[in-house]
Length: 190
Image (cartoon, rainbow, N blue to C red; front, side, top):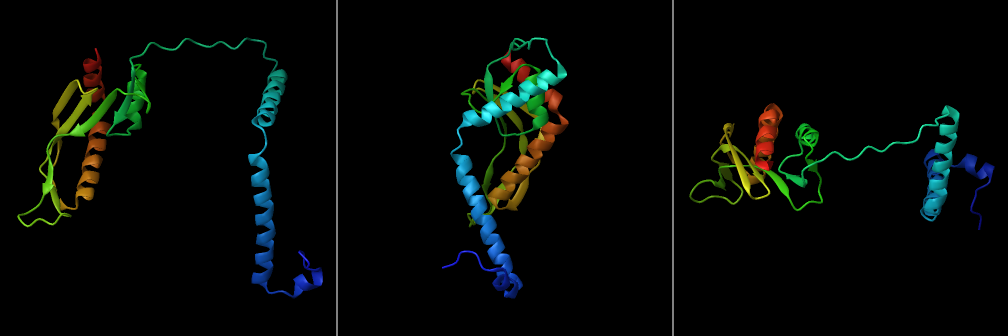
């Protein structure tokens, strides 16, 4: 049994057969490299990068010691719920509020109003939202209501669509009123 065809056999094959055997050989090579790389000790890789960094620093002739700055004083770490606004996160971190996922304390951005089934013989798939405004709940102890930041009534639509539209409205309100929201959050944390 031959694993590799002779050149004259290979030349006589159709194009799809040639492509298949080439893809097979490349796949086997990729599989072997993938398995091999899974068993390389991290120390080999780390030593390689450490040597590269040392060579680069020798080339640039840096003799200054590396200085680590002390961490800024900050409030406790908070988990941000209800929004992934990068601008809001950056502004909070600029005010020394650490945002991370590994915290028990939360800043929850939510809304007032309710989503309810539409009509007397309502289908479980058709709902309405009666409208409301933006709310922020900080660590379940401080609630800020932004009655001027309204979320319009929506529906009738499936509940999932209404929730997506409400989230879209919240994101737009945060984007256009970031400074006001930051100010209220900071007042709650004082």
